[in-house]
Image (cartoon, rainbow, N blue to C red; front, side, top):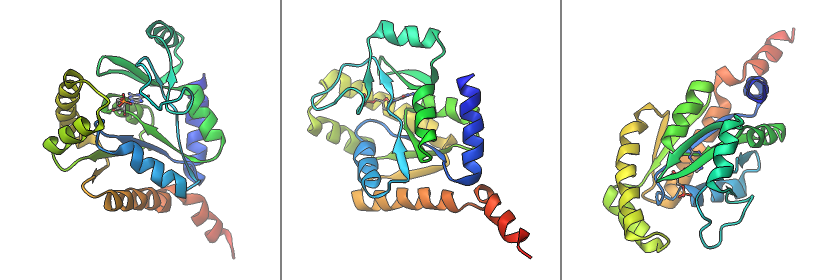
Length: 216
Ligand code: 5GP
């Protein structure tokens, strides 16, 4: 039921203003810093906070970084069909709750889902209008370096993330846009261009065309 309401609101808002963006990237690609910087300057955009069964990292807060839940709470939410999409990523559950997306859409903003490629594929199937953006560092070597410098994950976790990054890159072919984060400012500008271009797409502004044409 909630899913139908989201589809309805999304279809209504897609014609007007609110768009659904999916931004995927392997961890360490700089996705979160890029989006934070863009969101600080653009109040038309908002990020949906995901649920995860992974433990909080230092500095992460419940309700802002993620909704941190136990594994059993997460599987309970799955059985209640509470997620728009969910996936097992690096051996932890991550999911976008339907309620969260509905709440954000009600704010009348463009909603960004910061999710992995499995989740992106599920969203594209449910909402073909969603815009899928993939962010990648210039190389896997640089990604590894960044993860090591971050000093938040063990060498085993870093190895797992590199292996997954390679697989994710292979699956990014189905995305609409690819942004290479070699230089922060360039990648930020590229993302801003995508958000703006999608807002201006004729297919999303049919109501404006109709208004103009109705004036005699
Ligand atoms: P991290 O543990 O580094 O915060 O995130 C690990 C991966 O999980 C990232 O690729 C991130 O985009 C993905 N992720 C975060 N939230 C969600 C979600 O709600 N759904 C899915 N499918 N992936 C998510």
